[in-house]
Image 1: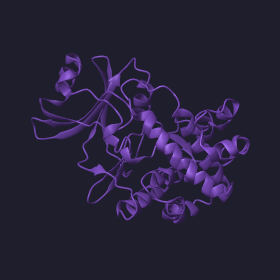
Image 2 (image 1 turned 90 degrees about the vertical axis):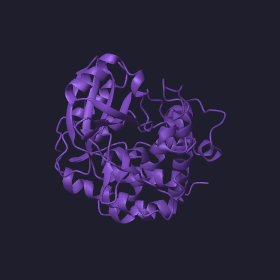
Image 3 (image 1 turned 180 degrees about the vertical axis):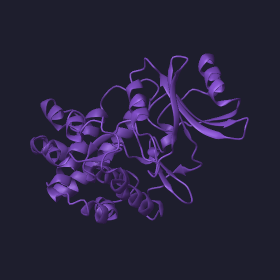
Length: 313
């Protein structure tokens, strides 16, 4: 991605640059930290490191200052109650240490999923996401927000762009702005359900080992219909190099099994493209300098998906 991989999106502090009270507090809970492998992937700044401990154990620790604008996402992840059989690293504990919200997980010695055409990871990822509903229904975290209510304020953008069209707006989008704005909310009527959804499936949140595919960073969960997490895979497959028909075909059996209508998926594709087209034009957040470049490429991928589904000229 330009960013070309998850490691190019965020700027994370080196272990030695973290506040001393945070490092000392972690050592008090975990024991001596012999080595810290800072993970630079993801879309938020802050602590993200695999910690090798003196007793031979290894954990993954993430954290952010408690007064940071994104602190709520870390708190949401700590509150998300995942069953032990969920394909996600186990949260060992969370705490406020040295003014930072910290979460400590079992470590997963995996790699980010490879999603381009021909990769064996694609089928494994689709199978894992397609199986989430059987594990996460009924929703094991009843306090998470309902999908329609939570996402209605986020996954959209064409109404705003139609009100003041940017000069660099994609030509297909410009020609169809009114139709895009009218259609981008229809999917919301099919969004609610009783499945715990991840809500942010992308390559940086998919870890692959020889035996398992793990879904990490449950920081913006919602309770809704299982087709949502599956549909989220499609633009990311396009972003990885699949054509829209090939991306849909890869997910088709799993998403068809949810019973979602074709019209709902079309509206969601439109909304997804609007969301990225809108947010890619926002100022870059602190310490995530390449996020908007990533979102601009993602917007192009989602636009090709929306154009494929609508067949609008």
